[in-house]
Image (cartoon, rainbow, N blue to C red; front, side, top):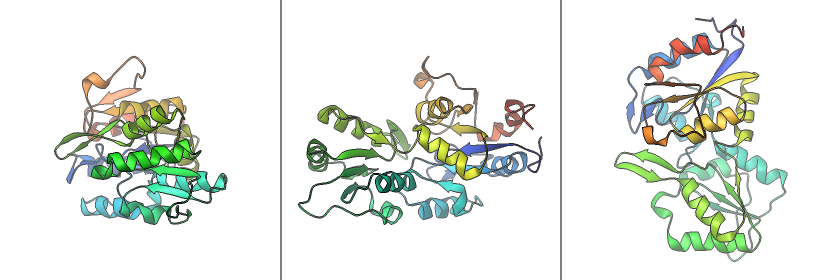
Length: 265
């Protein structure tokens, strides 16, 4: 294994489905995270979770026994703020959970009856009603830009698979005829931002979503490793994305890491 002070590469890890599922840590995940910190020059936990704030994500990880800092966790919310600020949006409709609003506090929220410059779409869970979606659709038809915090098609809840933000974003794009902007995975900008944050030019992405995690990373020039935990489904594999490697779980990944970057340090 390569000592961290000699390594020239970093590790990007998805969280839900890779380190834990629901409230249960993946067997061997604690030890694997410790090993990956020792083997690499830095680790970032990159999540598409939009139902929780960054603070909530960190607290949940700590409750499950993972020692992580706020700086190690990256979410799409910060990217959404940067995007809206760069475009000078002065009125933003936020279709996000209450818990996530603290991460979007820098944005100017839409006033009742006003026209939106952008619609920021996150996970509303059961709040994805016809009324809410129709409201967003009308804002898009009036010229607002759709800013999706992520584009996952589905995720795994305690009661099974459930539609994720990407499904609702696709419906709004189809109905409005306007393509939205994705600031979370699989956006190349999100992976580039993670690389910039870690201060490295080499990194590998590990996730349970073959499209958002693995496909997104590989399109951005990073190796992508798929784990058979979380939302993994064998029938989700396709010719469109061929992972750099597939492992049973994060517990098996440390032994593979050195081989992926063999000769890079």
